Image (tube, rainbow, N blue to C red; front, side, top):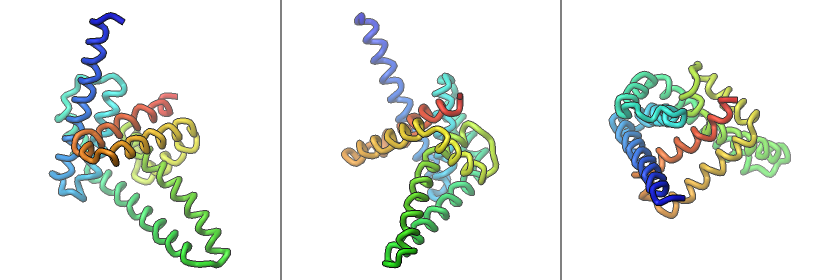
Length: 200
């Protein structure tokens, strides 16, 4: 590789890092602007929508304008979707907690069942925002198609799980990355892997 080629590769790497940091900043900013608990899900959906644009090659879009457009357009739907997912998570958590406290065989079977549901719930969470960025469905359809996609594309699902856990592990060793890279890096990574499923 020539010196000029190395310079260009480094330039593109730093360009991506800068873009991811800016996207992460907008994610945090719009979460706060949206009131925290009501801004998180629209900001996350907007982050994944911008990530999708970049992944499919549209890298010259006006980032803040696009982010604000997605945030505003999907504000109500993504909040409904987010809080439906939270409700499901809380329901599974308390059911699992209750089943773990019993020594009865029936409740042990329930514990195993709820653990499977938790795994499925986790992969739904990984898919739901990439799918929201790529398709236009009703709220519950995003959950349904996230599950279908996760089961239909096991290789991509495993790659998404491994990628997500790797990023989380890195963040555990350097929590400051949450402020600079975490959200943007997760959205770019999950979008890049999931797009392989959508395009086939």
